[in-house]
Length: 499
Image (cartoon, rainbow, N blue to C red; front, side):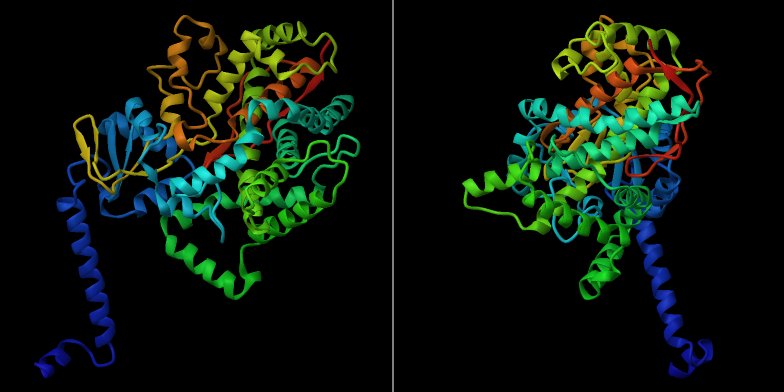
């Protein structure tokens, strides 16, 4: 037998030959199981998606996964298999069930662990108790009452934006809408987190801001790799513990910068708006508890990621559509003048919320922008999950992209057309049952009220002060969807001062 084996397998290659054959056999058996015997074998979907996770990974790398997945439902129905153990569903009732208060559809570990450093944070916590404890610490700072005080910071953070636009208008140069709105959103979230003094306002330095933007630009594709191949995330984490400087530059910078801002905020004596982390420390002190600086910085890094580009993208996309709709722009300008008689008027959030057409514009901007358009996978609980005629067993990964609701052509005819009047029609209440740009339920985005407040104030100030030099034909926006919507477009526009 030995002699026969060596006659077939050349000496020196036998171990590799056996290893390769074994690996190929294993892969073949797994593929056969996934296609014919897996509990999801009868769920329709692309053939390659049934074989391995590679199909979904490559689809998401295109930056157009939300649209590709949405198109699959027209071919396969409301439940589509996109990976051996994962499906996407398109059904509002299923979305509500998955994202209700007290849901047992917990977050998919590999997907959310990709966002986590050494310490977890509100976004990445998988355990409901961990999430609930941290949320109780943070919620008071995001309450409506707290945001009334924060509106002064929002107005202050807008001053560099308006100064930049006035300078561009004076020089008759195009105004890059997205970059300047992005700076505003970052300054606002940083001041909200670390505190702010109206006597001596300081925002993020240019060098630090550019490094944060670089981290925001470069991380989405990296995160995709970690989500689909979590072993790589583990190896990077191990290496970073052994050689701290081996961690990605973006991670190292955000950690260092967070520590610096935290230390500076504690030394500041004249902050009339002490910020989120000060408020959290006060609540913890009252309970004889504390969080380490590293845990606080983990939250700040998440706020930079979640609170900057989502808000900036929504504002920029909303403004871009407004700037190409003369009738809508004029209507909004006239309505804003009723509470903003002067260009430098600073109406309260309550006043801005009282304007029906402006409110419709905000909702339509949120709907059409929908920054988190991709998957937010959950794990089916022990009792399983029935979606139409498909039963999903416990442990199946299931997601319902938010964009399926906000861009549903049956609910919002011509969904990519910017039409604020939708929200003033008789069926507006029904439409609102599909408007979940920040998700819903227990894991709804804690910063949704803050984000919308920034959107209201920023757009109101912009429209009251400026208008297009000439209304032009709409040009599609350049961007890609990875974890959230990533803008590849400055959105330049020639502006003039409004009357």
